[in-house]
Structures are given as C-alpha cells and as structure tokens.
Image (cartoon, rainbow, N blue to C red; front, side, top):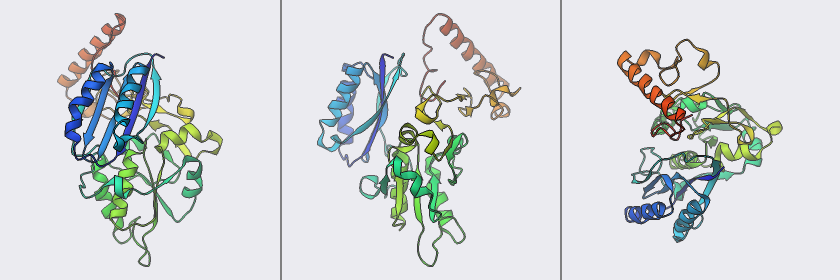
Length: 315
C-alpha cells in the first residue's frame, strides 16, 4: 500500500479563493500529487493522492493559511494512484445546494460524536434525515432514517419546504419545530443541510461528526444502528463496519451501485448495462460501452492503467 489518499473539506470564509488556485495547483504538482480540489468563497473540498510525503506537504501548505489551520482530513491507502491528473477548480459552492444565503461556517448545527449518536437517534421525538441521494441510501442507512429520495443535493431544500407544510415530517407542532438529526457520508453535506435548517428557524439541529464513515470506523458492529453498506466515491464503491470493502460494484453506464444479486440479472453486461439502465441506452451507446470495456480488458492484460476508468466511484 504505497499511495496515500486524503479526503478533506472545510467550510470557512475565503473571499480570495480565486487567488489560491494557481499556487495550490503549483504546490500539488511540485509534490507529485493528483486529484481534484474545489475552492469557493465558502471553503475547500476535495480528494488528493500520492506518495505520503507529497500528500502531507500539500496538507501542510494548506494549514499554513491561518484560516485552514484546523483543516481535518481522512486517510486511506492504495497500491495504485486513483487519479491521473491534478485539478484545482473554482466553484460557487464546494457542495452544490443552490441556496446562497446559507453559510455553514457560521450557521451549521451541533456536532454529535459517533459514540453519542445512537442515544440521540433513539429519541422518538428526533426526526432523523439521510441527506444523501437515493442511490446512496438504497444500499444502507441508519435504522428509522427518512429518505428524501433526492437525485441531487440541490433537491434537498425543496424537499424540506414540502415537509415543513402541514402534515409533513418537519411540520411544527403547537408552534414548535421538531428536533432534527442529519447525516451524510463524510460530514460535508450534513453541515450544509443543518445550516439550511437553522436558516428556516429550526433551533435544535444536530449532525453526525465525521459522517457515516467515522461512525462505521469507531462504533463496534454489535452496538451499531447502521443497516447495510455505505456508498463511497472511490474505487471501493461501498464499505461496511470497520471500513472494510463492501460487496457492491458500479454499473459503468449509469453509475448505480450493484449488489451480487443485481449482477445476476440477464440485463447486466459488464461495462455496458444493468437492469436499472438497460432500457435507457441505445444500441449505439451499448456498442461504444462494449468497445470501452474491450480496451479496459486489453489494458489490464498488458498491466497498464486505462485512463478514465479507475476514477472516484469506479470499481
């Protein structure tokens, strides 16, 4: 396991974020680091990989900025580089919600440590919300969590508005809004979603510190309230307790996670289609996918990487 991967984010006011792009890219390239980093006025988000000394040099460069001194990251190891180029992109948001008046650096809810999470969500008066997208929720979630069934994070504000209406799951009772607990994969989406809730007048809003990944890493399976596996945006596809690699792979066409049972479907063809998307692609598209899969297999036979395949979210 030669290569270190570091996933990082921090909500912080960065009005000069555009000026950071060029020197940050230069630092990454000088240290042989690959991946993608997003910069916006609300902070930084992304994943980088390389030799350990290179990744740590980039992290040290970032933390030399007093505003990023408390930047945290999550580490994973691999025997190959999961990225083939380095990109530093300027964005309006580091995670897109589309509500510019929400400022997570100033408005996020209360952190709850993984070891305290079970007690909080066991309270029947707490509304537990999974802020991830539907395809992520489909393979695992916390027991009793509400699935907003969103296809993108930007749909969450609309769902919240609907559920705040009379009869909805977030409707006030006797003029009092309910207590809300929210969670996501690594923490970034639930920080922003709790800030959204506070902007709408919810006073008691909580989110899982470190996200599902930290919970699965630290809470023993025998004491866990988690059911299923957790979708991750890297070559593992899914993980379970102890962050052990899960059993899911990805469909190369629609990018949905596939279980072993899904892969038994007669509509599943490696690199081409699955039962979810078989009817949504044309024969011409399928021919293109088959040629791509053929090139992948030829590259693997030559023990070469096929650029564009082993990207975050691939098998």
